[in-house]
Image (cartoon, rainbow, N blue to C red; front, top):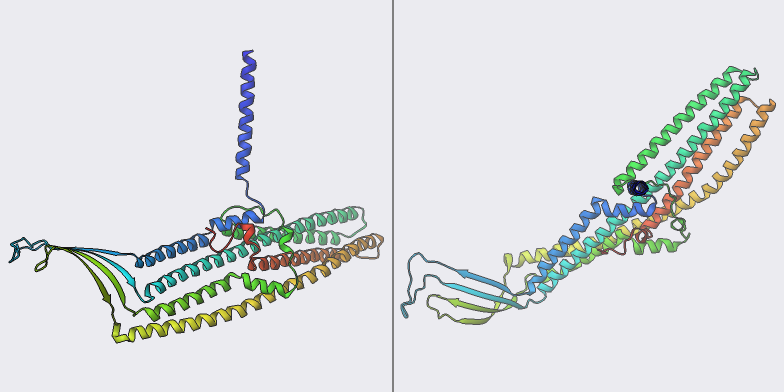
Length: 431
């Protein structure tokens, strides 16, 4: 009975250890799929983290600007080396002190416009953060698709090597049976070597694609899962371009910069306005003054450079506003051109995809026909090998066309915000 319990405990410990090892191995396995890749890129890439820090910095700076509405506390205390006494009361005045509280009650819009500029700067940094996210999502999606395309080329290369091995084995049997010349065998061996070289190049490109994807995500992503089909479904109409312009992060950034320039114009216009304060003072040991509390209204104004400095700032702000407005229009034109170009290229790849698929079907039928004609003696071994090469090249072209179509589709989705929800981005300031 005791031995049975010991054996049962050992088996239970072994099972727990096996399950624990399996869980550890599962945790070490790289993530797979486009969604984990996008989420990892937004979570780990320094560009997003750094830009988020800039947004936080602007928020703290805006808090400092808003504090201009709050009272200002000042304290001043002195210590004279020689004792100083009042001639009237004889009180020791060697340690005079003043405590003041100053509350702005009217600044003629100057504080308000300072706060408006600070808020506009926050909006600009938020829009910049959204642009960085969109650019990173697009780059990650393209890198993921390129890895998928390179993986397909590796599959084609391995299939090509296997088919050339079969052809070499076929010609070797015919040479052994004195039905073919040894030159045909050497040709088949050469083509097999070329097929292996193509496979090695495809593997190298696949590894380079993984390195590019890792540089964006900072974690290993297997990229074995295909791109979700809904992301590749885009309508072929001008509405896509208009929607892209509405959702584009670059355009939103330029609009925020224009708003910031307009706020700068208002701030420059009111920068030289006076400020009216309500001030309360507490006086202690002041010469010729009675220790008491005093309340006063303070009018404060300054005119730098006889007003020329303020005039220059107003002119600078107005010129910056005009530049921001023209920059917005220039970006709008450029983005429309880019979107239309992406749509046109995607449409072309879709047409080529249909044609290349039909051509591949024809070549596969021709290869079978050439094989039968070679066996019947109406086609040479060189013709058969050339047809095999043509078939493989057609497979590679079809894979490239399909991959380019996927890439163009993902680029359009990224620029209209179609990847945001997949990556968990709700807006320009979602956290």
